[in-house]
Length: 366
Ligand SMILES: Nc1nc2c(ncn2[C@@H]2O[C@H](COP(=O)(O)OP(=O)(O)OP(=O)(O)O)[C@@H](O)[C@H]2O)c(=O)[nH]1
Image (tube, rainbow, N blue to C red):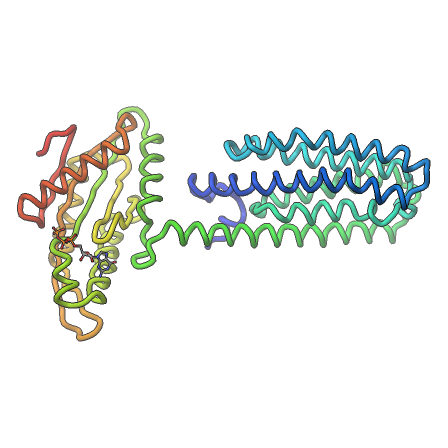
């Protein structure tokens, strides 16, 4: 895991961004629900704890705060569609709660005379925000915003009574809670990233799996500008069952790992490479024409054909070949059709006797 994945969501894939934002939206909804219940339900505590003058004002403030929080519940359903809605909702939540903090401090005038529940409110807020799996940069923004608003409120309403010791205590506590919030948020982000990786990677070859590959294919298709082409390849190992039957499944696995390594070596970082099925692989080459793709597939075919693979058990060597179906698409292509055409081309390669490349353009086999 790279540090930039912790720092900002710019380093996340589009697929993961959508998954994370859906997760944040659900947590946000629960947070708002709990806050509505907590803020309004606390009226009962205030009834016991506060004097009549404070209670008369604050029960109304609590009720209004609860009502103001309610529209955030339906808004949370929009959050999972768009990051901007998420930021807006979080901002609205902070503004409402910090307003509540402002009015309650204003009613007591002095932090020293406030009941513990009110003094602890900003820290309580930071602790609750820890349930959101935010990257460090977003967590930092939330922390700075809350700290600035809380200290600004203290200064504005309470500057003459807040002595240096109290101020240092408040800043220190806010800092501690902010750091704890960011630590928990980052931990949750890490857990989510790990789970995502495990669910999108093939455990044997560590290549991406079919689900993520299709997602990437859709993304490349959307991002292809104008008539810019890309190449899709489906590759299938020839007579792979024979390797399993003659040399055992361990050797079969070794062959799959070896071919995956050759794929990465030949196509490099520019290509999107996946284990598509049992002994099938898929490669996506953005900004590539069919001819160039077919040439690269041929280079791969030759590399695999000439590469002896050692059996980890008895150090004997075996050889494998592959067949390839290569097609070309652009942003107008349909994903299902493209895959079907690549599969047709692969089938044709098998029909021609295996260990060959068939490139297909616009449904015409070449
Ligand atoms: N060792 C190992 N074998 C696998 C794995 N996944 C699928 N297989 C095997 O791959 C073999 C695929 O066999 P077939 O679909 O008959 O294809 P083939 O023998 O390659 O024949 P053609 O594709 O027609 O050339 C099956 O025997 C599967 O058990 C895996 O992860 N490890």
